[in-house]
Amino acid sequence: MTLGNDGAPLLALVIRNKAQEQSTGLKASLVALAVYGIGSPGMVGIRTLRDYPLIRTIVAGISLKNVRGWEIVNYLPLEPKGYPRTDPGPNTVLVDDALSAVRDKLARALALNPGSSGLCALYGSRALEDERIAGEVARFCAGRKILFLEPLPTAHSLAGEAGRKAGCSYLNPDVYIGGSDSHSDMVQAFQKARAIAAKNGWALAMLPATGDALKALSSAFPKESQAGYQFVPVSSLIKQ
Image 1: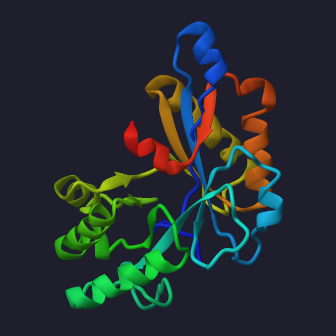
Image 2 (image 1 turned 180 degrees about the vertical axis):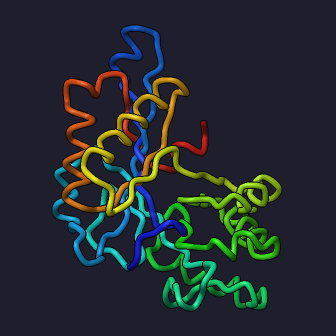
């Protein structure tokens, strides 16, 4: 899987500390971390992720086993600009697809991991700028009461607007960390997520399943700094 600016999956983290909330009367900030890239070359596996309990959501393009305790959001491959030179892979929703074909592809994407809480755009810079496709995705998610996550919205994406019209639980991350980002950039990105959560009460961040990203997460959120935050699945943010 190629990670790039067209919408690779992200990791989101939400944090709340109930003990602090009870003792001070102040609400803790929510942080949702969504990790992406499981099963891709150079990425860590499920066993490694178990050592990082702050991560509560996995964005996946493969069928996962033994993932009890994590929320799963499935990839939805969508046509990017430059297709087919840039190809998200099988089951990609294309702008020229009939609506019946779009619906079939949406259903297959959701069925990849039964019980998943939503869909995450994989690429889609062309498809989500198309009113017909964006509307169909939003109506599908609204009808099934699942979330739709758009990692890197383009300037002309219609997904958010379509989501509002359809009553779809639409989200895009406050922070997106790319697989090729430097360690220092990753640490700064997590620190930005902390600041946003402290200011707004919640933040969503997406990160790749790389050893460097996990080390950056530990650096930005050491145990002694976690008071005042509660880490939650991405779906917890749709109520905010």
